[in-house]
Image (cartoon, rainbow, N blue to C red):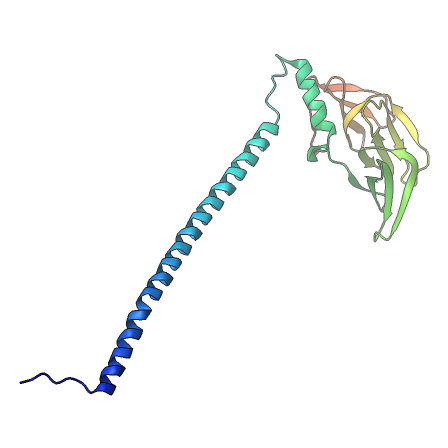
Amino acid sequence: MPERRPSGRRGAAAGKVRLKTMGLQPQSSHLTAIAAWIGRTSRRSMLMLFCLLSLIFVASCQEQIAARPGTIDAGQQPEAYAGQAGELARNGNLHQGNFVIYCSSSWLVTARDSQIARLEQPGNTVSWLTGLKGSRLASHDRWLFYSGATAGSSTVRKVMPDGSNDVRISRASCQYLIADSQHLYAILNDSGQVVRFNHDGTGQQILFEGRATEMIYT
């Protein structure tokens, strides 16, 4: 039988549909290629960012490790050990301690160029112990004990919490100061020895001959 051909209208419609379909295929391929390129670029960018952050992290860790002081044998290198111990004791380490203490219903702190301040409870009144500077504070029985704030200072003093009766009790230059009911304990700057003396500065005794950097009183 002879093959039937669709009518002109239907054939034209079919042809139009076929042409439209064929016209969409190249556009879809371009979109797919663009999407694939964006995906590859994003992955490369994320990988490069990860590598960069890793390098920054490793570099920062190396700087921190390099900044840490090395171990020095006190017996083999006494001068180098003394220098490092002095820096650790003076330059802001937490074991220096005694920056805020409680004495006679007040808080005593060091602030403003190492001046000693008194904070009355509940903390809304601040007064300065005029002319007094110290970086190591200790207290007992209504007395405040302190040593000089700057390196090279060679006094240990005691004063009442209101700033009166300021008295020098020792010429010792100390890195640390602790008070109990009978004695003061300190580390001497020049030798690193741990010493004990009375509240009036008399009766100094050496308790430890080595080069100490901190003390803990319990």
